[in-house]
Length: 431
Image (cartoon, rainbow, N blue to C red; front, side, top):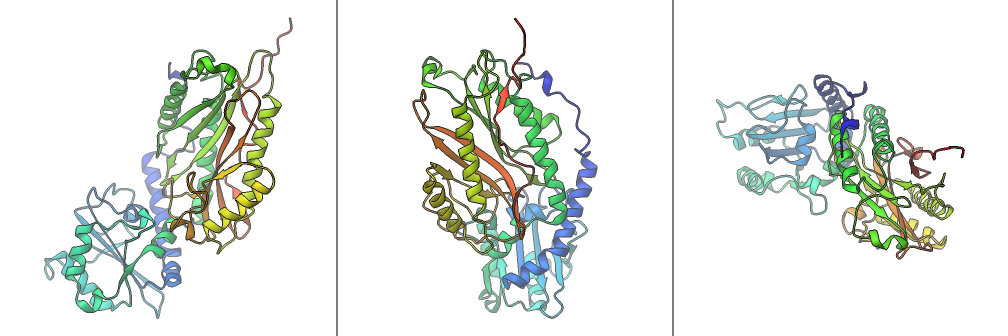
């Protein structure tokens, strides 16, 4: 299959790399200034130490590096201390260099040739009540300190301060999951781009029934994302559901009329991620719309979305939201599976898990995390419908990115409510 269609010019909203770096650094400075002090106060953590060595970066530290730093340098140690009297947060780097413009270098190598001793001196000057390190049982994002760094740091700490070491999980999760106003002005562009890529991929520009395979479309998506100047955090997938009358095609991925196509795709831009799943129907000769049964099945999945988002409340845990949504959906005669997750700096991001596909009774640990405002989620789920002609229940698998705040839940760039059609409109040719 030719990828000539994918060789499009970079659209205006995709900035050159230099300008992207300026935006990333501005967003990061705003987060340090406007989010971190309140988060440290809310969690009762007055000192947060983030440590990583080059090419073995803590996931949190990666989000704190300036755009020009693609990795940590040697061992990079960041220290954040909130003064309880003034509320001011010191941002220091126990490193050979300042980390961008937001974190000043604070290692006097003449006085303290040993990096750990330099860190201990800064701790002793500030006398924190808690020293939070990135350790976590339930969130890999917040468990980023390497074993060697952890053991060496603790060995360097005097017993007085060693006893004050705690997990930074509550603070790390908040840092990763909370979105700023500026970030939410940018996010709709990413969602819009993702939707447009899907719409083009699920069209006659890319799919020729009887010739194009699902793998062709997958690689078209992957190439298109790159050609437009974006990146992706996972390899896209395209799946086919077809009636049992097409059993002869069960082992082939050639797309044919009557197929229901499903895509799972996400892009990365300015350190933010999208995660979207949509469906397309391949029209049979003489059809101008999808069969009513498929349209009804799709509407059932939209209804599960509505039920789920209506359950969002600040302070509710992911498991509580999951249980309430499943109970209502089942009571309405739907057959739901819910596996919704936070999104932001990571595609599967830190924050409350609202089910997993194989954990519909709740997710221990991450599902017990409470929902908070100013957070984004991939509303991911499916609704299964038994349809005549299909050997197995047909699953409408939807995923759209949404934002949760005091006003409730809103889809950042809208959501799919109708199937894409291939071709996008049936030919109207008079005999």
